[in-house]
Image (tube, rainbow, N blue to C red; front, side, top):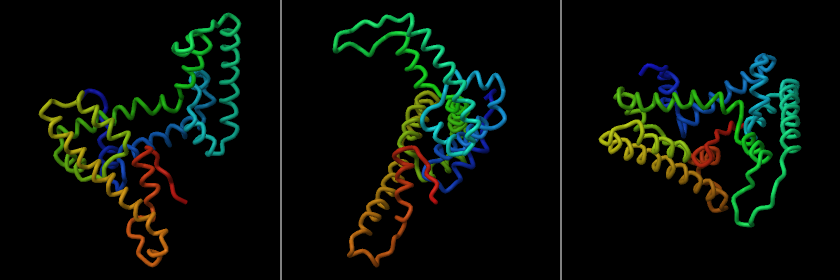
Length: 240
């Protein structure tokens, strides 16, 4: 494969004790992208032009805010809002929206299109997505070429719902039919075992609140909720 393969981070993620290796990879990319965005880069004209154009999704602006670099965020939001005001004033001054039938599709006008595009873009997401795509490329490359990685894939603790679906659908593009017939049962087994295991821990977590079980051991349920959130919501929560 001519393009760069990220075998080391992928191997590390699938070797880690985690509920979803892809979530671990994604979280690392998020942290690096947030660090880059709030670092000296926000003073560079090219990056500022991109943050002005793309803005930030709710998840990533919250992560940036939690980093306590208030000045950096203020500078980016200030110029981003300046551009948004300028663009929308220009569009709204020319737009003459017309009422549409009740059951028609959402309004198709320059103002609405501009806002829809802005709401679906994020500077941080845009930095993450190409590298994460290369991680997916690498997973399937290693699955086909590296027997040891195939065992890691088979023996991992499963995946979150979102990344199970991503691997399931991506297999149709990356693998031959013979490989698909082997790969899908493999990830099905890993996914359902992992989900049922965590769900069992959540069930016992609930049962522990029954006074009859107050002296019973917690087993593996003390951290069941954050692990269930990973499985269902594609979100790693750092426990305090």
